Image (cartoon, rainbow, N blue to C red):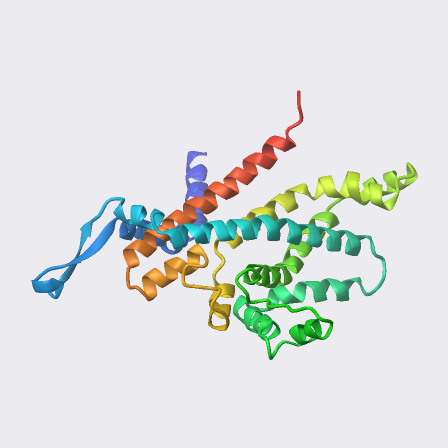
Length: 300
Protein backbone atom coordinates (compact mmCIF):
# COMPACT_ATOMS: atom_id res chain seq x y z
CA UNK A 1 0.00 0.00 0.00
CA UNK A 2 2.79 2.42 0.90
CA UNK A 3 4.58 1.58 -2.35
CA UNK A 4 1.45 2.42 -4.33
CA UNK A 5 1.16 5.74 -2.51
CA UNK A 6 4.82 6.48 -3.23
CA UNK A 7 4.32 5.80 -6.95
CA UNK A 8 1.24 8.06 -6.93
CA UNK A 9 3.18 10.85 -5.24
CA UNK A 10 6.01 10.55 -7.76
CA UNK A 11 3.53 10.61 -10.67
CA UNK A 12 1.86 13.71 -9.24
CA UNK A 13 5.25 15.37 -8.79
CA UNK A 14 6.12 14.54 -12.38
CA UNK A 15 3.04 16.45 -13.56
CA UNK A 16 3.53 19.40 -11.21
CA UNK A 17 7.29 19.95 -11.50
CA UNK A 18 7.27 21.21 -15.15
CA UNK A 19 4.69 23.82 -14.21
CA UNK A 20 6.64 24.85 -11.11
CA UNK A 21 9.83 25.13 -13.17
CA UNK A 22 8.17 27.36 -15.76
CA UNK A 23 6.47 29.39 -13.02
CA UNK A 24 9.78 29.96 -11.26
CA UNK A 25 11.60 30.78 -14.51
CA UNK A 26 8.98 33.03 -16.12
CA UNK A 27 7.42 34.65 -13.03
CA UNK A 28 9.39 34.35 -9.80
CA UNK A 29 12.82 34.94 -11.36
CA UNK A 30 11.84 38.24 -13.12
CA UNK A 31 10.09 39.49 -9.99
CA UNK A 32 13.06 38.69 -7.79
CA UNK A 33 15.44 40.29 -10.29
CA UNK A 34 13.31 43.46 -10.43
CA UNK A 35 13.32 43.70 -6.63
CA UNK A 36 17.09 43.11 -6.52
CA UNK A 37 17.68 45.75 -9.20
CA UNK A 38 15.50 48.27 -7.37
CA UNK A 39 17.69 47.96 -4.28
CA UNK A 40 20.91 48.88 -6.11
CA UNK A 41 22.34 51.79 -8.04
CA UNK A 42 25.12 52.25 -10.56
CA UNK A 43 28.22 54.27 -9.64
CA UNK A 44 31.26 55.14 -11.73
CA UNK A 45 34.82 55.32 -10.50
CA UNK A 46 37.74 57.32 -11.77
CA UNK A 47 38.14 61.02 -12.60
CA UNK A 48 34.87 62.82 -13.42
CA UNK A 49 33.05 59.51 -13.16
CA UNK A 50 34.44 58.28 -16.47
CA UNK A 51 35.92 55.07 -15.13
CA UNK A 52 34.40 51.65 -14.73
CA UNK A 53 30.87 51.37 -13.47
CA UNK A 54 29.66 48.96 -10.84
CA UNK A 55 26.55 48.43 -8.78
CA UNK A 56 26.31 49.17 -5.07
CA UNK A 57 23.54 48.57 -2.57
CA UNK A 58 21.21 51.58 -2.34
CA UNK A 59 18.53 50.32 0.04
CA UNK A 60 15.22 52.09 -0.48
CA UNK A 61 16.76 55.17 -2.09
CA UNK A 62 15.30 54.40 -5.52
CA UNK A 63 11.84 54.04 -3.98
CA UNK A 64 12.29 57.39 -2.26
CA UNK A 65 13.26 59.06 -5.54
CA UNK A 66 10.29 57.50 -7.31
CA UNK A 67 7.82 58.63 -4.64
CA UNK A 68 9.32 62.14 -4.72
CA UNK A 69 8.81 62.41 -8.50
CA UNK A 70 5.73 64.55 -9.11
CA UNK A 71 5.23 63.24 -12.64
CA UNK A 72 5.23 59.62 -11.44
CA UNK A 73 2.66 60.38 -8.74
CA UNK A 74 0.57 62.43 -11.18
CA UNK A 75 0.51 59.40 -13.47
CA UNK A 76 -0.97 57.31 -10.67
CA UNK A 77 -3.66 59.91 -10.06
CA UNK A 78 -4.42 60.00 -13.78
CA UNK A 79 -4.90 56.24 -14.15
CA UNK A 80 -6.99 56.10 -10.96
CA UNK A 81 -9.32 58.74 -12.41
CA UNK A 82 -9.30 56.81 -15.68
CA UNK A 83 -10.30 53.59 -13.90
CA UNK A 84 -12.96 55.24 -11.73
CA UNK A 85 -14.81 56.33 -14.87
CA UNK A 86 -13.90 53.76 -17.52
CA UNK A 87 -14.25 50.51 -15.55
CA UNK A 88 -17.86 51.05 -14.34
CA UNK A 89 -18.88 52.34 -17.77
CA UNK A 90 -17.35 49.39 -19.63
CA UNK A 91 -18.71 46.84 -17.13
CA UNK A 92 -22.22 48.31 -17.35
CA UNK A 93 -22.13 48.32 -21.15
CA UNK A 94 -20.83 44.73 -21.28
CA UNK A 95 -23.52 43.62 -18.82
CA UNK A 96 -26.30 45.20 -20.88
CA UNK A 97 -24.99 43.58 -24.07
CA UNK A 98 -24.66 40.19 -22.35
CA UNK A 99 -28.23 40.35 -20.99
CA UNK A 100 -29.63 41.42 -24.36
CA UNK A 101 -27.83 38.69 -26.29
CA UNK A 102 -28.73 36.07 -23.70
CA UNK A 103 -32.42 37.00 -23.89
CA UNK A 104 -32.57 37.21 -27.68
CA UNK A 105 -33.76 34.21 -29.66
CA UNK A 106 -33.00 35.41 -33.20
CA UNK A 107 -30.51 33.62 -35.42
CA UNK A 108 -28.35 36.76 -35.63
CA UNK A 109 -27.28 36.43 -32.00
CA UNK A 110 -24.09 34.54 -32.91
CA UNK A 111 -23.22 37.21 -35.49
CA UNK A 112 -23.65 40.10 -33.04
CA UNK A 113 -21.77 38.22 -30.35
CA UNK A 114 -18.82 37.77 -32.69
CA UNK A 115 -19.06 41.37 -33.90
CA UNK A 116 -18.96 42.74 -30.35
CA UNK A 117 -16.05 40.47 -29.48
CA UNK A 118 -14.06 41.25 -32.65
CA UNK A 119 -12.33 44.44 -31.33
CA UNK A 120 -10.69 42.33 -28.60
CA UNK A 121 -8.82 40.48 -31.36
CA UNK A 122 -7.23 43.73 -32.54
CA UNK A 123 -3.85 44.34 -30.80
CA UNK A 124 -3.77 47.41 -28.59
CA UNK A 125 -1.13 49.11 -30.75
CA UNK A 126 -3.19 48.63 -33.93
CA UNK A 127 -6.36 49.79 -32.18
CA UNK A 128 -4.56 52.94 -31.00
CA UNK A 129 -3.30 53.66 -34.53
CA UNK A 130 -6.80 53.20 -35.98
CA UNK A 131 -8.37 55.50 -33.42
CA UNK A 132 -5.48 57.94 -33.78
CA UNK A 133 -6.57 58.60 -37.36
CA UNK A 134 -10.06 59.31 -36.02
CA UNK A 135 -8.72 61.76 -33.42
CA UNK A 136 -6.23 63.87 -35.44
CA UNK A 137 -7.73 67.12 -36.81
CA UNK A 138 -7.46 67.29 -40.58
CA UNK A 139 -7.64 63.51 -40.93
CA UNK A 140 -10.56 62.59 -38.71
CA UNK A 141 -14.03 62.37 -40.27
CA UNK A 142 -15.41 62.62 -36.74
CA UNK A 143 -13.80 66.02 -36.25
CA UNK A 144 -15.09 67.21 -39.64
CA UNK A 145 -18.63 66.08 -38.81
CA UNK A 146 -18.46 67.82 -35.43
CA UNK A 147 -17.21 71.02 -37.05
CA UNK A 148 -19.97 70.84 -39.67
CA UNK A 149 -22.60 71.03 -36.92
CA UNK A 150 -20.76 73.83 -35.14
CA UNK A 151 -19.06 71.76 -32.42
CA UNK A 152 -15.38 72.58 -31.96
CA UNK A 153 -13.90 69.35 -30.65
CA UNK A 154 -10.30 68.33 -30.01
CA UNK A 155 -9.99 64.72 -28.86
CA UNK A 156 -6.27 65.10 -28.21
CA UNK A 157 -6.43 68.23 -26.05
CA UNK A 158 -5.06 68.17 -22.52
CA UNK A 159 -8.55 67.78 -21.08
CA UNK A 160 -9.81 65.30 -23.66
CA UNK A 161 -6.96 62.91 -24.37
CA UNK A 162 -7.55 60.82 -21.22
CA UNK A 163 -11.11 60.12 -22.33
CA UNK A 164 -9.91 59.44 -25.87
CA UNK A 165 -7.73 56.72 -24.35
CA UNK A 166 -10.69 55.49 -22.31
CA UNK A 167 -12.73 55.20 -25.50
CA UNK A 168 -10.06 53.00 -27.11
CA UNK A 169 -9.87 50.69 -24.09
CA UNK A 170 -13.67 50.50 -23.80
CA UNK A 171 -14.04 49.73 -27.52
CA UNK A 172 -11.43 46.99 -27.28
CA UNK A 173 -12.38 45.19 -24.05
CA UNK A 174 -16.16 45.52 -23.77
CA UNK A 175 -16.63 42.49 -26.03
CA UNK A 176 -14.25 40.39 -23.95
CA UNK A 177 -16.08 41.27 -20.73
CA UNK A 178 -19.41 40.59 -22.43
CA UNK A 179 -18.27 37.11 -23.51
CA UNK A 180 -17.19 36.21 -19.97
CA UNK A 181 -20.59 37.29 -18.65
CA UNK A 182 -22.43 35.35 -21.36
CA UNK A 183 -20.45 32.23 -20.46
CA UNK A 184 -21.58 32.68 -16.85
CA UNK A 185 -25.20 33.19 -17.95
CA UNK A 186 -25.13 30.00 -20.03
CA UNK A 187 -24.23 28.03 -16.90
CA UNK A 188 -27.43 29.12 -15.13
CA UNK A 189 -29.97 26.22 -15.04
CA UNK A 190 -32.92 26.83 -17.34
CA UNK A 191 -35.29 25.60 -14.65
CA UNK A 192 -34.79 28.85 -12.74
CA UNK A 193 -36.06 30.87 -15.71
CA UNK A 194 -38.99 28.49 -16.19
CA UNK A 195 -39.97 28.79 -12.53
CA UNK A 196 -39.73 32.58 -12.72
CA UNK A 197 -41.93 32.73 -15.82
CA UNK A 198 -44.50 30.44 -14.19
CA UNK A 199 -44.58 32.80 -11.21
CA UNK A 200 -45.32 35.68 -13.59
CA UNK A 201 -41.91 37.42 -13.48
CA UNK A 202 -41.21 39.87 -16.28
CA UNK A 203 -38.01 39.90 -18.32
CA UNK A 204 -36.69 42.84 -16.25
CA UNK A 205 -37.44 41.02 -12.99
CA UNK A 206 -35.69 37.87 -14.22
CA UNK A 207 -32.63 39.92 -15.20
CA UNK A 208 -32.55 41.85 -11.93
CA UNK A 209 -33.33 39.12 -9.41
CA UNK A 210 -31.91 36.01 -11.10
CA UNK A 211 -29.36 36.81 -13.78
CA UNK A 212 -27.48 39.69 -12.18
CA UNK A 213 -26.98 37.97 -8.78
CA UNK A 214 -25.83 34.76 -10.47
CA UNK A 215 -23.24 36.47 -12.70
CA UNK A 216 -21.77 38.36 -9.75
CA UNK A 217 -18.61 36.18 -9.64
CA UNK A 218 -17.95 36.92 -13.32
CA UNK A 219 -18.51 40.64 -12.74
CA UNK A 220 -16.02 40.59 -9.87
CA UNK A 221 -13.46 38.68 -11.93
CA UNK A 222 -13.67 41.01 -14.94
CA UNK A 223 -13.52 44.07 -12.69
CA UNK A 224 -10.30 42.81 -11.08
CA UNK A 225 -8.82 42.23 -14.54
CA UNK A 226 -9.87 45.76 -15.51
CA UNK A 227 -8.25 47.27 -12.40
CA UNK A 228 -4.96 45.54 -13.16
CA UNK A 229 -5.16 46.48 -16.83
CA UNK A 230 -5.86 50.13 -16.00
CA UNK A 231 -2.77 50.41 -13.84
CA UNK A 232 -0.75 48.82 -16.65
CA UNK A 233 -1.97 51.35 -19.25
CA UNK A 234 0.90 51.74 -21.70
CA UNK A 235 0.35 50.89 -25.37
CA UNK A 236 -2.42 53.41 -26.03
CA UNK A 237 -0.66 56.52 -24.63
CA UNK A 238 2.64 55.36 -26.15
CA UNK A 239 1.12 55.22 -29.64
CA UNK A 240 -0.83 58.48 -29.33
CA UNK A 241 2.11 60.37 -27.79
CA UNK A 242 3.61 61.54 -31.15
CA UNK A 243 0.19 62.91 -32.13
CA UNK A 244 -0.25 65.30 -29.20
CA UNK A 245 1.77 67.29 -26.71
CA UNK A 246 -0.77 66.44 -24.01
CA UNK A 247 0.90 63.06 -23.39
CA UNK A 248 4.39 63.26 -21.91
CA UNK A 249 6.84 60.58 -20.81
CA UNK A 250 5.22 60.38 -17.37
CA UNK A 251 1.59 60.30 -18.44
CA UNK A 252 1.05 56.88 -16.83
CA UNK A 253 3.21 55.02 -14.28
CA UNK A 254 4.06 52.32 -16.82
CA UNK A 255 5.10 54.90 -19.41
CA UNK A 256 7.19 56.72 -16.81
CA UNK A 257 9.03 53.53 -15.82
CA UNK A 258 9.65 52.73 -19.49
CA UNK A 259 11.08 56.20 -20.08
CA UNK A 260 13.32 55.93 -17.02
CA UNK A 261 14.71 52.58 -18.18
CA UNK A 262 15.07 52.98 -21.95
CA UNK A 263 15.30 56.73 -22.44
CA UNK A 264 17.00 57.93 -19.25
CA UNK A 265 19.02 54.75 -18.76
CA UNK A 266 18.12 54.55 -15.06
CA UNK A 267 17.07 50.91 -14.85
CA UNK A 268 17.31 50.82 -11.06
CA UNK A 269 14.75 53.56 -10.53
CA UNK A 270 12.57 52.04 -13.25
CA UNK A 271 12.67 48.73 -11.38
CA UNK A 272 11.61 50.49 -8.17
CA UNK A 273 8.71 52.12 -10.03
CA UNK A 274 7.70 48.75 -11.47
CA UNK A 275 7.68 47.20 -8.00
CA UNK A 276 5.60 50.09 -6.66
CA UNK A 277 3.18 49.68 -9.55
CA UNK A 278 2.84 45.97 -8.80
CA UNK A 279 2.19 46.69 -5.11
CA UNK A 280 -0.51 49.25 -5.96
CA UNK A 281 -2.13 46.78 -8.38
CA UNK A 282 -2.15 44.09 -5.69
CA UNK A 283 -3.53 46.48 -3.08
CA UNK A 284 -6.26 47.75 -5.41
CA UNK A 285 -7.26 44.24 -6.53
CA UNK A 286 -7.34 42.68 -3.08
CA UNK A 287 -8.99 45.80 -1.67
CA UNK A 288 -11.77 45.49 -4.23
CA UNK A 289 -12.15 41.76 -3.53
CA UNK A 290 -12.37 42.46 0.19
CA UNK A 291 -14.92 45.20 -0.42
CA UNK A 292 -17.24 43.10 -2.57
CA UNK A 293 -16.66 40.05 -0.37
CA UNK A 294 -17.79 42.01 2.67
CA UNK A 295 -20.89 43.24 0.87
CA UNK A 296 -21.68 39.75 -0.31
CA UNK A 297 -21.83 38.28 3.20
CA UNK A 298 -25.30 37.87 4.54
CA UNK A 299 -25.94 39.12 8.09
CA UNK A 300 -26.47 36.42 10.62
